[in-house]
Length: 441
Ligand SMILES: Cc1ncc(COP(=O)(O)O)c(C=O)c1O
Image (cartoon, rainbow, N blue to C red; front, side, top):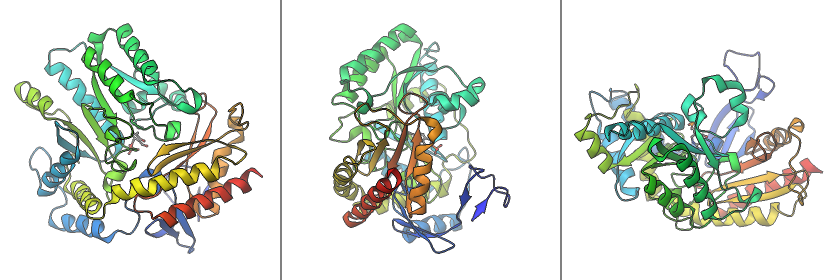
């Protein structure tokens, strides 16, 4: 165990003991004391292929041995070409160009900058405003954080952040409105700001931890698409958490049960490389690139590791593996079992207010009073203590706080690797139910 002030790593929690991970295999992680953990949240919803996948590890290693790095202004690589081709073949029609970056936050920033650049190319330089949703999360770099509905971060970093327009995100447990309600709110917000000043609307097609895997109401995608098209506002689908197969469809924004969004830009990260190399991607429309070609002739985004061959190789190997082993199909099939088991086993428990989600992505929300949906007081640190109790019992889940009212709210995200089998997800839910009963008894 490592605990501050041991060692020299800048630990994220200065009051917690950290086990040292030894290795992983499938849905399990092992620490150096030999303790086994069920990775019930794929870390931070990342390890889509599970742990110890030699095929992906060897493909990345082989790329590193051939060439580790070239600069994206000087070379492309076969790995980048092949990964982009494979990724764009999965994307909705017209989205045919991909850029690879290192994290979800970077990709969100690149997507927002791409949208802004396009406005300038079109001589619509007044379009400088972004619409985002609350609750919502788009990353921890400064503009991505500005677009995130996370009041507790704003308290600390407010002076560094930019103004972003916000509307409410569909979060059925705490306000069940239809698609038209949200579309009208978006329309009103754009009109009030002045449509000619709005650049893009960014949102998570299925919300990640900030609202416990809440799915949108029927018709939401189509309704917001119509509003954005009417006002010439670009749509950015942030699929960093919900994309790359997590919902049982490669893109959440075209999941057959949710609708068809037709975004202008899609952002991916996390599960896109299964965590084998830190990698994210931005996918954009070919016709938008044609406009840039006629205008400035550049995609104005310079980062040292843009398109790095190792990142591209990890995407290529992950997508190959997913296709060969029908990993997304498995996420759809086993995801149905996960969703029904969670509802059946967790909802009857006294402090479980809600279970939401789709595919291999779920949120379980804890409340002090089920009938009134009253959250626990933040000072009780319920979810922090719950996650530690689960960890001690050998189960990893991902916590979130603040979703109920900006301060209070306790939920855990459940999202096992997409390769998990039906018996494995049943074992996961059993473990979670046991921890929950014990914790709240
Ligand atoms: C929806 C969404 N967008 C962006 C990000 C930022 O990704 P990263 O932490 O890799 O920078 C996250 C991370 O949790 C996310 O859930």
